[in-house]
Amino acid sequence: MAVPKRKVSKARRDRRRASAYRLQKSTIVECPQCHEPKLPHRVCRACGYYDNKEVIEVE
Picture 1 (cartoon, helix red, strand yellow):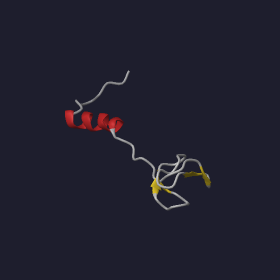
Picture 2: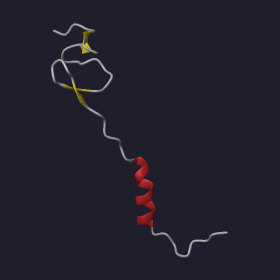
Picture 3: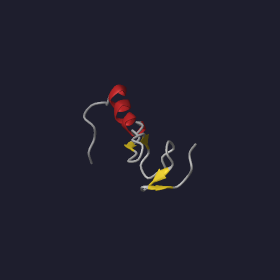
């Protein structure tokens, strides 16, 4: 059975655990109609288009 040779310092232990709590960057793509930034697979809030079709009317 494997036994640790030395004590793992608190800093090293916490650094290892912190990697699981990192926030993921959200992906942002450009709308092909109005070239505004938007989330992928969502209707563009600026122009109301999705998949080159107008889905909602935007004033």
